[in-house]
Image 1 (cartoon, rainbow, N blue to C red):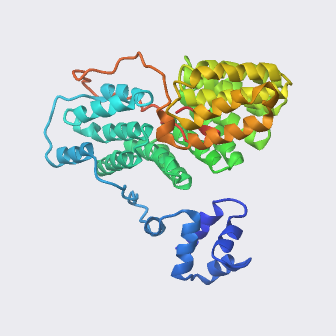
Image 2: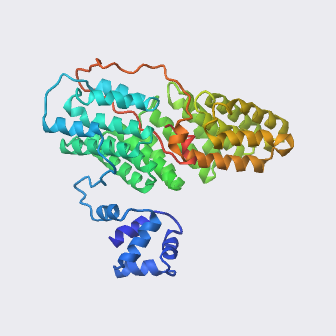
Image 3: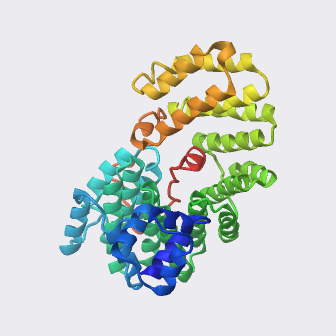
Length: 452
């Protein structure tokens, strides 16, 4: 168990051991002595786990896990009804001429924009889906719940899907659901465990010789490594992912290029960062408005870092224009970056006019005191008071508000014209098409930039 804990600590990066020693009131070299001796008191163990933000029972289960089983932590909270129904169907199997894989693929596509409707349709489909597809349906439902930040329900659904797929030796679905669960763990702040699940999924896909799924799992690993502030490792695994993913339009290729741009930016290689940010939208046949805005946002930040402020302004202006039709909170954040770029160019008058344009958002944002007061403060500062320091201060407050995911999600205004499937939709046989790549992480550096 101590060896396992040592790996956990070292995985946190430089300075992690010293931080642990300070957390338990010990001097330099104490932890390495404990590792060599192979013993530690219970109080010291609990103190270290508390410092690392790890639940003791979950840590012990993982440290002593049997690699032949899934060994996943049981989700918290009550079991959702759809999960209970799935178990009842397995215990009392009845052949039905039910919905097939095509129907599930349609639900899967809609989980990004219309998760509430997907969940309603899944509750109907649980009684009609072909039994072998129950794990996938639970995975899609869990992903939709994740989009609504109902993380306990999401974990329950995906965990049940994993158990059912594991019982059926459906390793392809196990790999897919491990990746979906990794996104839930990330939203719960468990990026190290999310990385571990993505690595397990990649191993499964590799054994199955499914290069496309293997490539998608590598993309997930690259994202989680960047979350953990390990950009060089992220770059290495993402470049490997591009070699595994098939040439041609692909949302996974776009996500890999996008994350490579972020990783290179964080590493200080701005030339490579810009190259990948420009290449990313070309990796898909048709780019959505949200993805377009996020890639422009990344380019604007890179131009800002390169002190090419005029080009940064052009990018941020487009970002704001798109996001005002999609998400008011993101639009206000992007406007703050536009203001900083304009002020860096010495265009204080234009910056003030942009701030004034946000007055139109005060009424739609009236229920959010943080955002509405931020706009009022910017406008109230006037031309003379519009400074970089003020904009950065206000932007920091908005970023804090952004961490309230349920509140932030309510600020979305995008509509969806693509119709949902009807209850009568049927598919005679499972499709060979794999599930679409999962959504994306939630930390500020990645949230507003990577695909959801």
